[in-house]
Amino acid sequence: MPKGKVAIANKSFKMLFKRLYATTVSTRLSSALKNTDLIKTNAFVNGAWIKSSQGKSFPVTDPGAVSGSGSVGANPDSDPHLATVQSMEAQDYNDAIKYAESSFNEFKHTSGRYRSNLLYKLYELMHENKEDLATMITLENGKPYADALGEVTYAASFFQWFAEEAPRVSGEIIPSANSSNRIFAMKQPIGVCGILTPWNFPLAMITRKLGAAIAAGCTTVIKPASETPLSALSLAYLTELAGFPKGVVNVLASDDAATVGKLISENPIIKKVSFTGSTNVGKLLMKQSSSTLKKLSFELGGNAPFIVFEDADLDKAVAGAIASKFRSSGQTCICANRLFVHESIYDEFSRKFVEKLKRDVVLGHGLKEGVTHGPVIHDRSMLKVRSHIEDASEKGAKILLGGNKRPDLGENFHELTVLGDVTPDMLIFQEETFGPVAPLIKFSSDEEVINMANDTRVGLAGYFYSTNVSRVFKVAEAIEVGMLGVNTGAISEAALPFGGVQESGFGREGSKFGVDDYLVIKGVVLGDIV
Ligand code: SIN
Image (tube, rainbow, N blue to C red; front, side, top):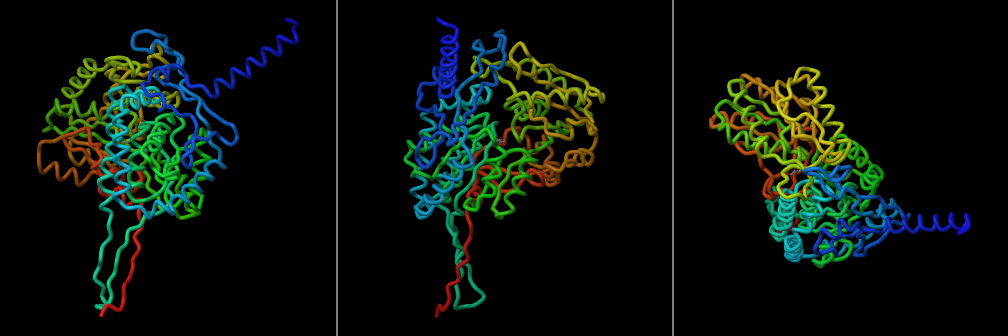
């Protein structure tokens, strides 16, 4: 072929390849699922699957397959690309918000029983597809399959819970000071809600918010994290199957979280924003939404204390500490972040803690049989993990277990790490690690440990182990957090009022209080009752 023609052929091939790549779902993703209808890469707006108005898209990758060498534990298929998802633009979000507004005008009149039935249907559909949904979570988030399956069940349980709450949303009649008046406290859905969710629970953080919004009679515009949009889009597909009216659930992915967060916060049609993510982003969204004075519920960062008193059942405390600290490789907002151990049991606790981790942990790709812990989500998480370990080591902490990256498994793998002799001057004491590092801190009295536990501006979750009933009450009252696990490291369930205090945010999700965040109370005075 002449030179010029080769160049043109090459160019066309490249363009074709680019187009194919932009619309293609990897075979790795499609062959991993039984029901490939769950794989969606467009946005779901007003009941239709649409592309970005500007033709933009972004890749979604498997954090467990980034540069793995294929050795033990790594995914033999080391191509991390899963799919290319449409990146929706400001115009697309504004359109979706308008659709959500017009659908709200009808949806707000539906009965609680009708909305309950929709939520039950969605709950059932999630269970019918739970293996596929779990596989998708593992692929885009990295958590081991068993944990991902646990997340699907947990996520679906919010639909079950709020299906039960929906028909029970009711107001009150309040006696008036004037005997010929009656006061009604009428509960009404607040309106269109913006839902902004993180990557660490690609389904459960949506369902906990969406379930409550639907129970209340609100419509929604959801932006999932750009790391994990596939699970969110598959959920949108299930709402379609469940028969949700169009415009009630809109799911739009984007790789520009800052622009979308601002748009959702400032758009006057949106009446409420629910956000789970970092404290810094929460502060920004609060500032941005002040222009329209929206109702907000924020579940933000934590720095959870986990206290083991000298009267604790040590084996149970060890198991609870591992469950709480290393769940999802330390990447949950309620993971124990600082482990305080009484000096009289410190050596025995740390020995048992390290021995159990050595015995039980298998690090590797989440779809591999027997793997208990997966990668961190991306290089930024890895940098934080490394900086906490390095800072603590320089300031005198001892590495009791792990301490290293595992590049043989992939770029995002890090050993589960235990640091001993950690002190309050270390970064790991002051900041949330959001990774697989457990710092052990010695204490000698209740007063000292309560002061240390409260020495933070955030307060999401906390944990302690003690068999002394008086101590249980006194410490439970003194720890400044929104949620507390006493003699357990696993607190999450739909019935728990989930949320924090101080700079961990406000509002409660799940539980019987969760719907309140999506309602407004109208006071109606009925006069002239004679
Ligand atoms: C979170 O990490 O934000 C949620 C954790 C949970 O619901 O258990």
